[in-house]
Amino acid sequence: MPELPDGLVVPPRDDVLGQAIPFDRERWLPRVPDTTWWPAELDACPRVGRWPRVNRRTVLGMAGGVGTVEGRRHLLVAALVWGTGTKAWSVDRRGRVFANTSAARIDDRIAAVLAVLREKGAVAAYYACNNDQHIAYLGPAFFTKFLYFAGHENPTGHRRPLILDSVVSRALRDREAVAEDWPLNGWSTKQYAHYLDTVHEQAESARVMPDVVEAAWFAHGKRLPRSGPGPSSD
Image (cartoon, rainbow, N blue to C red):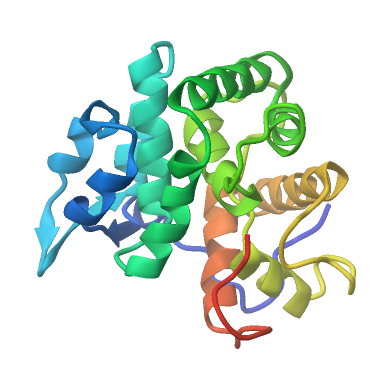
């Protein structure tokens, strides 16, 4: 069973759930289809300095609402907001999800993805997001956030959905937890399954939840230099 590499710091899960990201409500509102897509939970987030901040715990708590159209919309928006921060170019990039696909099609596709997640599990849902239920400009780094928030607390099967982005991938490559040619974005379904297996086995070995291990890899990746110029494409 793979163990966590020496020196990789595993945080308390309460710290992971408290991981809070600042956001600018006024920058987001023009980019969602209409104001009904904006979750009240975000308006209840505490302000720290200039910006309110939303944490993992808040977004995970919204997963109970995915049985409704409104709840699914709110979870998608909250996942995007949590993963984006306040920079204008970052919000603009995420806003392309709504600018290039109709609200009706987004509704249909996220409902279909969540049905796959519920019935077949995380790997099948990843495949759906990348293929027949793909939404333009919603790449793996962000649709895995949506899957994580939707299904980590109540998983189907033995693998909980986890976030995979370029920061985590840099860390995995740095500590040789994956192959040398592991990409920084655009992972195949097979690669996502391998990632889930690795992190779940490490979590079992360390006796922690899988998202704690994901957070540890992310923290390590943040300390590494970027592999190339400009923003990540994932």
